Length: 192
Image (cartoon, rainbow, N blue to C red; front, top):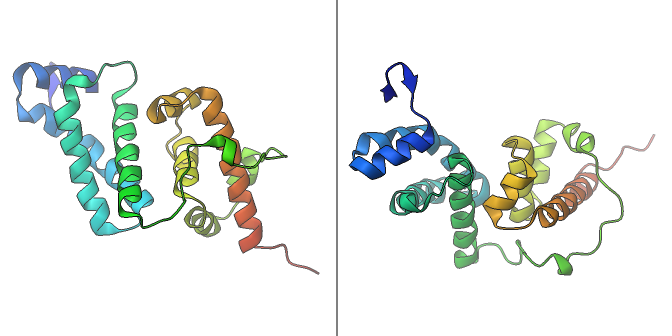
C-alpha cells in the first residue's frame, strides 16, 4: 500500500501522482482497489464469466488511457463505475445478445401508476430477488444495483449515466415497478 507518512493516499492523490510520475505502482493501487468491483459489475451485466473478465481488462485500459480526463467533479469510484457501466452496455448493444433490453427513451415506457416502496424490494427473499433481477431489462437491473447494492446517491447515478436527477428518479421508479411486476409473475401469492 502506498502511503504518505502514515496516511493512506486517497484515490485523487494516487491519480495525481500517477499522472505526474507515470509510476505504475500508483495505478496498481487503484487497480487492486477497484478490479473486483469492476469485475462483479461486468459479470452482473454481461452474465458471462469470460466476457466479464475481458470487459474488466478493457475497462481498466480505458481508465488508464483516460486518467488525465478525470476531473474530480465526482468521486473516482463514480467515474470508474460510469466507465464500467457504459462499456458493458455498449458491449451488449454491439453483440446484440439481448434485443430491446435497454432504452434511454423514457417517453416509450408506459406511465407507472403506483409507487413501489423500497421496503417492497427489500422484503423479497435473496434467491427470489436474484431471479427477479435476471428477468428484468439490464438497464433496470443496473439502476437498481447502483441504488441498493452500491448505495449510490441519485446525483451520483445521474452523473455516472449522464442523465438528470429527475430522469434517474423516474427510471428508478419504473425499474422498481418492473421488478415488483416480475416478482408477482414469478411468485404469485398462494391461494388458500
